[in-house]
Length: 523
Image (cartoon, rainbow, N blue to C red; front, top):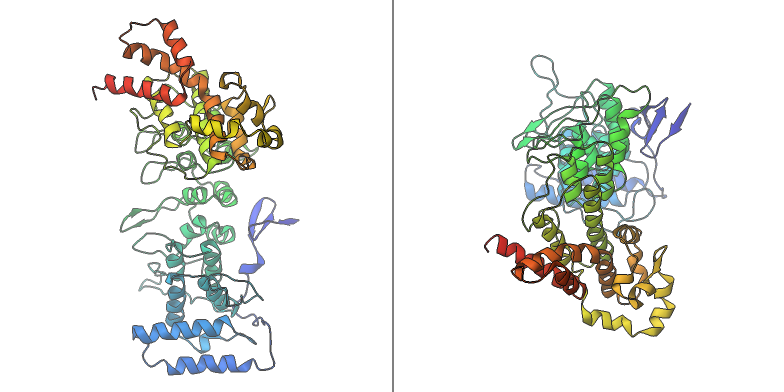
């Protein structure tokens, strides 16, 4: 028995099998698109365009020919052409490369070949060529009879074209054309092979075919600019879990490092990959009857950092909790020092309230998780965490507070219906004192993760700032007492300093900590 997967693959007894879309035989009859009574002129026009092309080596003529051909392909009706009878293979290679390296602009006026809808020019062009049944030639061989694998194809060009719309789709369609899986063509400049590209773009069936022919799941490749990331890295960074699972089933090394010393676990934690990827990756080797290698949690990359370091710096509390639960070592763990704690990881996410609130609350959750495991924060780290709130514009302003404080109608009709936690609504938060708000960083994190900040139809910025002010109040007050006393040259008691910070806003408390830090560093 088999089941049909969502990634165009059949799964037989836990193993991947190719789907029908790649099994279009070279000698199968052509498909038919929509037909009209007068469909033949399209084929005649195609021949005429080919005959009118005076010099293929003339770049201007060739580009004009491509544009005209693109228009013909885009409105084709009737039986599809047999491209090998019209063009030489190297000409078709050029046309495919030209279409994927073009600007790829969306032309909604051109109907999709399948019967309507827009799409990128490259996607439509490649799909048309694939539907004609055209397939790449057998690989050329050297004097020893071995395939010549150093060749840059349209697949390589598409994979490296960052501006290409629907790039994953275009790459998958190109693999219908370049389907010689016994030949893993390599671009000598980038070092990318067809197999690496399949892993990068989630082409499960294509990767399966390469592996079936004996390709190493940990294949290393080097170009003019250095080593290409291993296949498992590319699958993980692309978010292609089924492909990563396939590679692990084929005994890919989960601890294989790239040129920067990063393992796949480093990549997951450093790039803030959404979902439960870290949990899945760590536990993927624990399946019953599977012979896999244990993931090394404390592997150090080229910057001397572990996955735990990157998870903390990426504000991924779930990943931090998972790593600590599985025994990640805290003995050598340190946050980056100084006041640039998160600066190397984040730029300001303008306008995205949910993300800003999630980053701020997530940072405090990470701190709590680490402290619960015995980690002792240094003052420079505390100041840097506070600086994140300023960077994200989450310090509450008195002028903002006044806006919603006196809008009784909005408070009654909207704020009461928005629940922040089982213990408090938005109404409780804006009407009561900050000190009495029973809001924790986890409450705010889950509220923001559910994208509930946009339920606040009015005063969004002010309310989210209030939310973050309330949930971080204890953290700011606790850490501001010592710096305030030092700035006062210890003339005030700890109790007196604690009373003073009670009446200050978080921004004021941050400035106190910042001033003390600058004094300590003689700035």
